Image 1 (tube, rainbow, N blue to C red):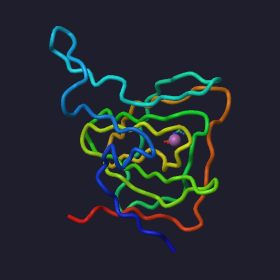
Image 2 (cartoon, protein in one colour):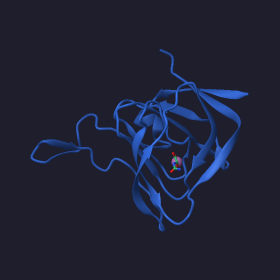
Image 3 (tube, rainbow, N blue to C red):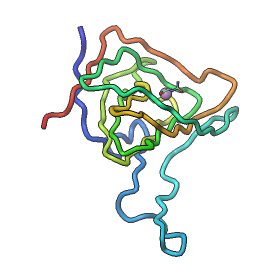
Amino acid sequence: MSREIVAEPLTADAFAPFGDVLEAEGAPDRIINQGLCGRYHDRAALDFGPDGRAGISLFKAQARALPYRLDMFERHPEGSQAFIPMSRDPFLVIVAPDADGAPGTPRAFLTAPGQGINLHRGTWHGVLTPLAPPGLFAVIDRIGETANLEEHWLDEACVVTAPPD
Ligand SMILES: NC(=O)N[C@@H](O)C(=O)O
Ligand code: NI
């Protein structure tokens, strides 16, 4: 048995319960560099806890395809995790609210070109899921001595399908 989740376009409002959407759209917050650059300033709630520190890592992840089967959610109880694509390819973001310590009703989002995300601390999510090679991302998350990882294997897998045309 599996549970179908229809992917929806990623918007800041829809994603707000789970994290921040990063995109250089609309008027920038500041014009800098002698007027040659728009700064979209301080757009994510970063959180690395009292015992961690911020780290930037690069991920090169295998591309997946829709329909996409998800068997496991994870979360990072001690810090946020941001994924900034280093291409303009879309990627798939699957998240869920917490329901008594387990993932609740999942939601799946397809990013638009240029969008990145920052998962808030403790947000249930599927692991990074690019939809096109090379799957190259900058990842800003907590570096620390603890695992900062909780996994939940689903009794019933989710299958994410593309939104209707
Ligand atoms: N394990 C790791 O660094 N990445 C995952 O947390 C992920 O969400 O992709
Ligand atoms: Ni993660």
